[in-house]
Image 1 (cartoon, rainbow, N blue to C red):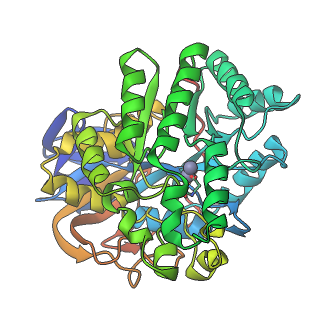
Image 2 (cartoon, protein in one colour):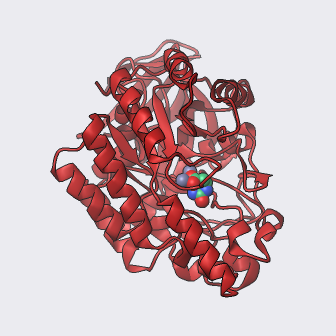
Length: 458
Ligand code: URP
Ligand code: ZN
Ligand code: ZN
């Protein structure tokens, strides 16, 4: 059915205009004032509201076997939560581990998502080893439309690659024009520091941060950048958490390394005092890189405001409290991860407004930039003729509170519990179909499609 969103303020990077948006056959076909539309068109009055392009979360975990358990969401629960919060596309980390076959892993992740996601999706393909068949498998995966890789410098012997494997991955990515996203922490130092702390009887969640200090992340970030510099590949640091790592990334950008930077919601809004709470309360806030000393929040917000940081994702990775308790005897065994897919847009909008960050930056770091970096633009990440009609009508008058009691994520706590939001989507569409309204899912469960993407980074 055709859709008209009437008289909202359409906000895209570089433009704010009061107009109507008309969509037919899944795409935006007309933008203008007082549009006359065919009978039968679904009409939504957006007077007094903002109309944003669908938001993109460039870093989520949904199906994830990790740390002796599985992340809690399904593609259905995560995508419904995403839509209610205004995210219409997510990019999931496809994460077979070192003992798995990469191609079989890719097919497994695709099969988990297929027919089960209510919004559109893509994958970053993790390269967790580089063996004889890796190059041909990765070529096949890129030909299938997955044009970004992921490497982990952390998680030794599980997801982690060594420097030789990083070099081979980046060299191939450079030849294929594929961007490589990277979790940047020095695996050896993490392992040694964990060992040392546990031997000293320091096993509570508060010791997670000291086991992976800022210098360990800065080293990983700097090393990744040096390898990019020497292979010519394009790279993207995921979940950069602190000033030291930011300085390493900015120094690399300044000398011309093709490097982009992502921060994630927990590192903007939470700090290490949350993980220092005793027992299960602290465990809920264990993720890697860890929540940091509070001053880093402001550093990251400023970098975001200035455009030194490119995107904001969530690193959505839900584990219930009974799963977190796998680490009751040692922080080393606490499943790493904090959920956030449902709350990202509302919290970024709310806190961004308080910090006087313009809507232009907001749309860029929460949608457009990810679309550009990952080969989705202009299909996604903007409102333009020919773009997919992924639209978020945003009610800036809404006032509410984030809570586990009202969330749709399949998880028994919310790390952002009690934070107030000043605005939320009143309507969310995926390719022209209304999928969420005022905090409720009202759409078609399996509507989401796998997004094929061309390599862009030659
Ligand atoms: O703690 C985190 N970040 N969990 C998910 C896996 C990862 O490193 O992204
Ligand atoms: Zn990571
Ligand atoms: Zn992650």
